Length: 338
Image 1 (cartoon, rainbow, N blue to C red):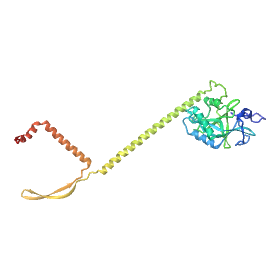
Image 2 (image 1 turned 90 degrees about the horizontal axis):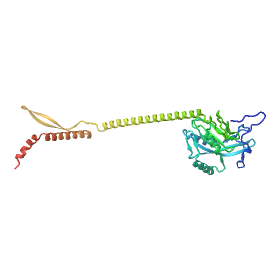
Image 3 (image 1 turned 135 degrees about the vertical axis):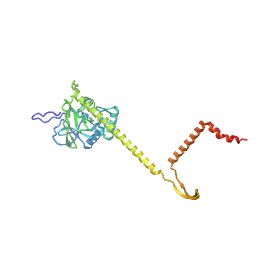
Image 4 (image 1 turned 120 degrees about the horizontal axis):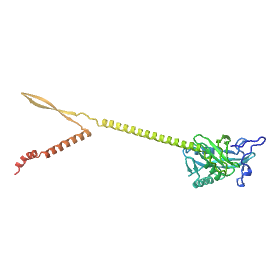
């Protein structure tokens, strides 16, 4: 939270020149924002860096992502400010739903990218996301800030990609404190300041620092999110099964219609009528016998063949079961044998 102003005194920023080491001597530059901006530490973010940060934050709405802020510590007539000119995503970081971890591979990739793409810049802080959990820094976040970004002008930024909130913390002599404003391309942006202040640097967390209510809310949010994902999965699974079933029915119906249309039964065709005289009593009657042709469809031809084979098999079985009839049938042949 921002310090209170005393009557008759100018606002004293938390980061002063004497707090910066010789290696962090600020560059002389004009602050890209309004003059006399009352803030604990003025933070200016370039438009391109801000756009890259938002894009990286929205690339994962389930697990946290992280990276570092690259820029310079600068100074003008009003004091020290930090200008963020680029962001470097944390590749190979240990990402979770409620925490993020900078691994050795992450640091190697960050330093390589910083040397290759931004040789004149240095790390001025870090950022990470809290998708769906607000922008209050956790004890793990404060631990990372104290141990890896403990410089007096190094920032810690957290954003919630679901609601767009953003909060920035800075190291001060009183501990880690929230900033209530920052500037993007010279335009003021409001930073979220949670009701519970951040723990001071080096201060041991108290028994109530874990905030059981907040942890419970986070767990409930995770449970609700998991149920929503499971319900969405079941809905998509049933929808896919229904779609495939409808396609199968359409395919079967279409094939049946096509088969009936392509192999429809046609009646026999009369090619010629042959007159045949027939004697009926004392009169001769001429009857016409038609000679027809019929192209039997393959399906019906197969049925007829099966019926013929069935009749032949049945006759063979009957002959086997009645040997006397078979012997009587073969008797004349035996008499003709010399």
